[in-house]
Image 1 (spheres, one colour):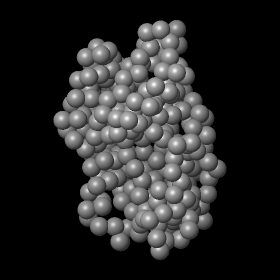
Image 2: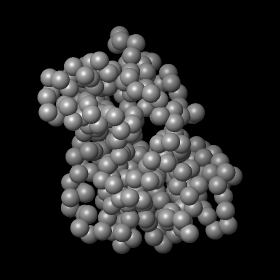
Image 3: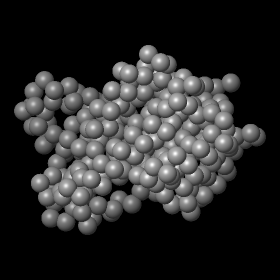
Image 4: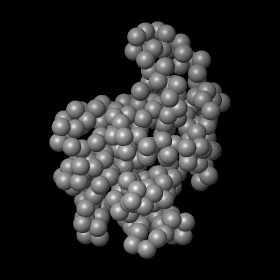
Amino acid sequence: MGYWQEKVVVVTGGSTGLGRAMAQGFAANGAHVVIAARTFDDLQATAAEIRRQYGAPGREVLPVACDVTKAEDVERLFAETLARFGRLDVLVNNAGRSARGQAIDTTPEEFQQLWELNFLGAVRCTRAAIKHLLAAGGHLINLGSLSAKSASRYLGAYPVSKHALAAYTQQLRLELAPHGLHVMLVCPGPVVLQDRDENRYEAQSAGLPESARKPGGGVKLGAIKATDFVRQLLRACEKRAPELVYPRRARLLFILSQISPKLGDWLLRRWT
């Protein structure tokens, strides 16, 4: 029996994009998957697709409409998960979105919106799930990005929200690892996704350099295949790694930025 067989996995933001790719990866390896997102029609379509591709006797996909910025929705998500499966082995805090804009032009209200979704959404879900994850000796996976490690230009409030998530993940790792919980921060570069709207930042990028419209704000890294990323994610999780940065060569930038902020800024200008 494989490592993920019969495990119960909750993926927030699981109806589209990277969340859907991760849900598919867990299901393909034998897990029961709960996908959560705000739009129920998208959830139903994704659940049907996963069942069609990876369905097997006894394996289930449960779609739950949930807005992670609302405490009552989060409580209901885990209540329905426990009612159906009686356990929880993995939580993937993936719900979130990016942004575009110069930091100085980003309003406090825009910072608050991304803070609520990208950071506090993960805090709400983690707190609601934690006792069940601890009971299972399971996995808590927080989806950061390369921006969780090093801020870049023209991404508005996004890097701030992801830096906070990185710090929260480290705190949880230090506090909860002794109790048997695996906590991992995942920082992927731009991932190729079939259902992603590549023009979604067109309006926000008005007046900014052309690179701001591109994935990752124009970071000069080769696009990552979703299947490759998910394979690396599952492997890192099985090894209970504390962190996954993908592609790995991005780590060099982060190391150099810590040693020399001046050099780090120079490299960021060249790489984005």
